[in-house]
Structure formats: structure tokens, C-alpha cells
Amino acid sequence: MHKKVAEIRELMIKHHEWFRESIPLIASENITSPAVDEACSCDFSHRYAEGWSGQRVYAGCSFIDEIEDICMDLAKEYYQCIHADVRPISGVVANLVMYNAFTSDNNGKMCCMSIVRGGHISHGPRYAKSGREIFGTAGTTRGINVEYLAFNNDEMNLDIDASAKIIRDFKPELVLFGGSLFLFPHPVKELSDVAKEIGANVGYDAAHVAGLIGSGYFQDPLREGADVMTMSTHKTLPGPQHGALVSNREDLIDKLRSCAFPALLSNHHLHNVAGLAIALAEMLEYGKEYHKNVIENAKALGQALHDQGLNVLMEHKGFTESHQIVVDITEFQKSIGLGGDIERLLEKANIILNRNGIPSDLTAGRHYQNPGGLRIGTSEITRLGMKKGDMVDIAEFFRKLMIEKKDPKIIKKEVVEFKKEFQEIKYCFESSNKAYEFMRFY
Image 1 (tube, helix red, strand yellow):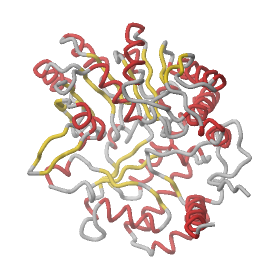
Image 2 (image 1 turned 120 degrees about the vertical axis):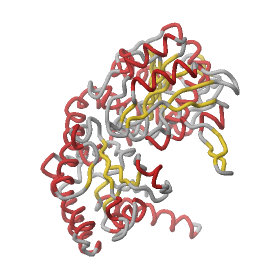
Image 3 (image 1 turned 90 degrees about the horizontal axis):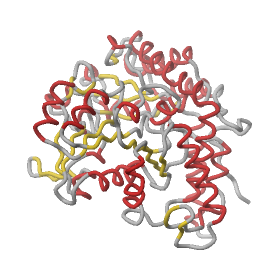
Image 4 (image 1 turned 45 degrees about the vertical axis):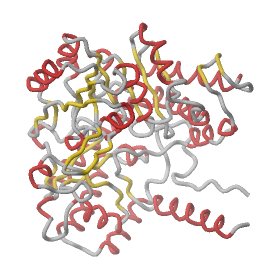
């Protein structure tokens, strides 16, 4: 055996052990169940199945077709829609399918939320700013001309009246909602009506909130005016890393299919389609309870951090309606540092989260690598069985590290002890396996 193989294996084991003893608070992550893991490890990972189910370019796809059909049916049931495509290999690829369908080649026009206000990099243009290129997916790969919708900093949401004026003046082909910093439902109904006035299609990037929406929370984009909803499948929807898109527009089905394959996809990671099918079945069974607790935990953690003296944004609106909360940490700039510094501090104590931009970063000139905020998510800790009372314990770790400035090595021991009670994955078909177990093959 090559010595690097043993080294790689050892590093994977160490990673599993680290997360078994950590509090995972990254809003764009979750943990899959043993049943999903089993599906993702099947022989499908060795196979090819270009094309649509029943219309493959490759042989050997009979059972693959059946499972993909089941996956699409489960997605249609979960999202109450008539079309689901589970072939996109990520949320970004699902967005590219939507861009292909709704925008012109190289000179298309789109309105969306800016990256610095919470939009995703896949929504961004490619443009020069102060001599530096910005490589957003929409602009770089599709040549889309992007105009940003107006944002209300005080409400952490789109400004309806100002955004309506931008849409009418700019006349985009696509108006896109959704983002990666996503506390409250977007005004889809109000601005979809405006988009239809000027002949634009409406998209909704549900990457972060797909599970919440499917389980009946947050909002209902397909019935509020969205023509297509895209998503990644590993955040609030606790499946494998993959993508999907859904629609209720029968007249768009053929176009959306061809804008995925052959336009963007060859093989589409068939094992993850199998895993996604299991995850969708789990959420149809357990999603109502799971996502209710995800949102309740986010609100409770926001309140608990606020009570411990941290500046959690949007107190006047209950902090959040999603799985995320945002903390303004600029008061710690002189004593500890900004977002990147505090992210690293917390990581030393086995608290895993990510730095994030906040509205004041623009005027203060703060860099995205060390911004003024932290983004915290509750999807994974809820899947491990944590409830509202446990959010108080987590908030106390923050206070000890950030306000009392205790040694992170000491707090790490407390975190490890706290985490011992949360080692099983809940809201799934199989819960006997421990979370973060390394699959050992002999």
C-alpha cells in the first residue's frame, strides 16, 4: 500500500472523530442518515446514465431508471408540483439549467439579490471593480447582465417598492429570489406580479430553505409566482450533495429537460440520486416535525445569544423565520477581531460555523475574508436531537469564549462533554448507527 493511502485514511478518521466531538453550526451543511449513506454507496457510483429516464444513451440502466423515477415522484409529492428534475449535480448546476431556460445567450438580463446582501455567488455577474475581476457564475458562464434588487438593511429583506421600480426600468428576462443569507421569506408574490408585467420569468433559489419549504414552512414559491424553484439537496433538505429543480409549468418541462441534458450534464452522479430518493422519503415521513424544530431552535439560539450579550440581528422580528441567524460581531474588532478571527477562535473550541458579511460591511470597507458577521445554522444540531433548551448551553459557550475570553482549550473540553449526549441521527428511518461514524472496509 502506498504510504499516502494510509495517511489519507488516517486523516478521514480524524475528521470523523473531530466532528463527533464538535457542535456543527454551518447553515449550508447537514448530516445524512445511515439509509441515505447506504444508498450513496451502492454500485450506481460506478455507472453512467446519460439522458432522461427511459431514454438513456447507455445500457445497464434498468434499475437506475426505476430509482430515478421514484426520486422524481417523491420530489413532486414533497413539493406538490408536476415536474421535478433530480439530475443536476449541485444547486449551482440547477441554477445554470434555469439560466439556460430563461435568459438569452451572452446578453441576457437578470435581477436578483446582490452577493453582499445575501445572494449566492452563482447569481453574480462578471465585472471589473477597482481593477479586479469578480467571477460570478451567472456572468462568467452565461454572460448574464445582472442588476441587483433593492435591499432594506433594517428588515434584512428585499425592498418591494424600490425593487419593483428596478424591475420595470431594467426589464430583465429573469427575476430571481433566494440566497445564501436567508432569514425571512422573500416577497415573491408581490414582485412576481411585477415581473409578469414586463414578460419576465421568475426563479427561486431554494438551496438553503428547500427542506423548510417542502415540509410546509417558510413560504411556498411555486404558488406565489415562481416558474421554477432550484435547490441543492444537503442543507435543510438533509440529503447527499446534489441538486434538483421543480416546476408547476407544464409548458416548460421539455425546455427545462433539454437545458439540463445535453446542455449541461453528462452522467449525473447516480448514487446521489438514490440517496436523494431516500432523503425525500424521510422528509415526507419526518419533515414536519424536524423542520418545525429546526426553526424553533434557530429562534431559541438567537434569543439565547442575545441574552448572553451578543448582537444578534433582527431581534424585532424574532431573529429569523428560517434555520439561520446572523450575529454582528463588530464590537469585538479591537479585543478579538472580526468574523474570520472569531470563526477560527470558535473552531479551536470545536464550535464550527462560518463568518459572513453583514450590511454594514460595505460602508465600513470590510473584506469578505474577515467581515463583520457570523452566520449560524441549526439544521445539523437539530438532526442530532438538540432542542430549544440546548440552545442556551451553546450560547453560554459563545459567552465564555467571546465575552469572558476564556481559553478555547478549556471550553473545548466542555463542548466535547456536551456533545456526548448527541450522537444519534434523528428524523430518519435508521437511527441505531452513531453520527459521524467512519465506514471501515476491511
